[in-house]
Image (cartoon, rainbow, N blue to C red; front, top):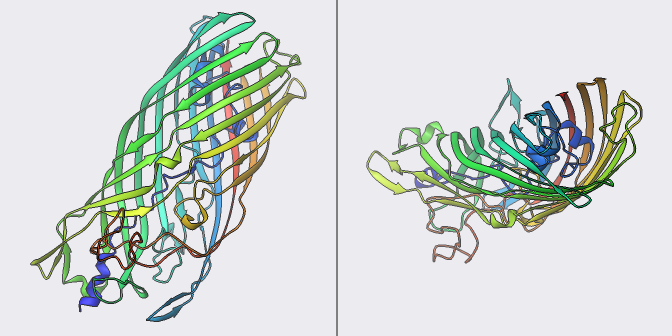
Length: 486
């Protein structure tokens, strides 16, 4: 009986998709076409996102309604699992969900001045928020005990939304103008549902622990929400001869959301086990993003005297994901056995060991006629996940991207944009995995795992989950409408 009841020791596996470099590609259809650049070229309502100082460069009223559609391909072939119970082989898994919509809304107005403007923007991080790594039935991920990703993530539906109000001023300077701006507001996080499979741990509560893929159940983490203040800032210099330089930043956020969990226990133990509470809390960090941009603008637009015909832009982007070393989830309550015995549920720590990421982005535009402007670009980005910490919760390996786009100038006040980008990542083979199943009833507790109960000091209990072959790539299709009146 005890070996069956140890099944419920695997209560929480914290693999939320708020982690290193989880933003794949860039918001807005135009930036998607231009390799993710925008620090010195966004002189309309999108400036509040890329560089708030450039709001003061916008003229009149601007409204941007955009949506990028992100498709994430991910496959994992897990190595066979060998334990005292025998050898278990796993089928290849892949993300069964298709394109995930990423809307973007922004508006700005200059109040008929040449030196001041304000803007309002609502957007989310450019990331994949709805995945399924098992069978998809009627839009819902179905549990599979022997799914290769069951201890990482089999399904997720989550989102982060920013709402910012900002302003900027222009200051005349020798040979050009300086621009200063900032935005402030809130960031809202919501995890509608996250699904994974938990299974029995063979043997006693003491280590070592081994998986038993034939004995599993489904856990749902849901209704997790949090609200935090958010802000960004920007500085720019635009010379009279076409040279531009800019810097912008969006500081990190420490999330502390509360939510609920539920475990669908096997019928054989359901009547013996209850939980004193299904509440839980989570601690995680979302990195800040800092951008430096250089650009050159020249030529005369075929019809609009206020616009350049061509431009070239280079951006360097730094994200401080290295501050996120572990992920912590704390259940509120105890496990109750036979309605009388209480076993405390320890906080769960999962190692992330993220690294700061750097990306170099290039992009440009050329007005081929009074009606059409073409965009092109690309980027390279370093990995947030080391090979040993490769995980199914999000994809953040080395990335390489190429992109194209077209703007149709319908009238002097209406533009339509279409764009496409393809994001490549090299395949990975993980042989010394550091992603372990978590066991809250274990006396081998995190984040350091140095207790006497640990079979190997510094190593979590359980079995590595991520050893095998991984492949990934992404595609982004962007579409946007921009309305502008001077």
